[in-house]
Length: 331
Image (cartoon, rainbow, N blue to C red; front, side, top):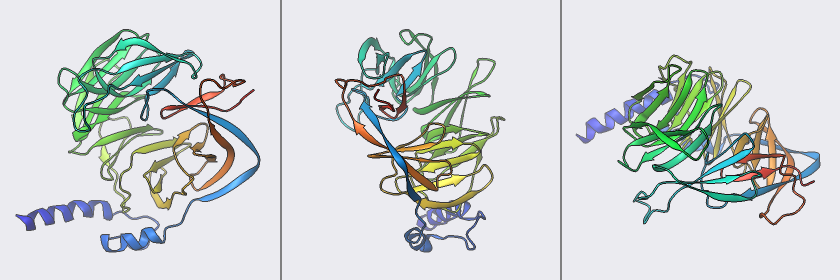
């Protein structure tokens, strides 16, 4: 039985190692460690005039894709506290409201589950997570105004991310769970193996990332295919798209994909962190770095953490990053 398990594991691993790219020889598990050690790093430069940007951590918000902005209003998800790390909360997420990103108030709204991501479309707000009725089930809810919500889908597994595309809404989650809201208004669910699917990005195609290093694509047909690559970049959680180029991030690496091929991953600099898309790729740490290609990153600003008592802040120029609001001008 152990031998059979080993052979199955070896066969699955081979799927990810058998793709051609810029590396002359296939990378096998014995050489991965040495390959990572000798991997090229991203290039860091700096422009002459360095600005100061301001980071405001939104109260009670923890996580990625928990804040949206629509029609001059910010909405943020506040997850209920659980008694332990292994137990889901028994109460639903709540919502906060802000008109400037700096001053927030509770909306007195408790949602019918625990929700991991929120997105705004032209007509609705959507949120995905798990249902309180059955906490192992996934839940999709929607609202026109952010105050009154309806549950539009309960699916087999907890959902983590949702995105709008030209082909409708897509949501993904545990156990390969995919939910698709088609243009006719009908939700269709399906699964991709038993992968944990955590992140969605939409460019010239829809891409899903998951564990351990699964990448799936869809060109609008609703049929997803595994994209094979021979780099063991473990823990891909975050992906972005800019002008034909996809970037995938793990804790240590940046993986680039142009829609047809992968390029050798680069080591992340210790200053490259929390990357968002704002007309180009922008990394937010103590230094603000910007890049068009994911290889060369230029320091454009320094980032200062502030509280809501700051004066003279121009709240009209801001964007969302994770659980923070980033303000780019003070006056």
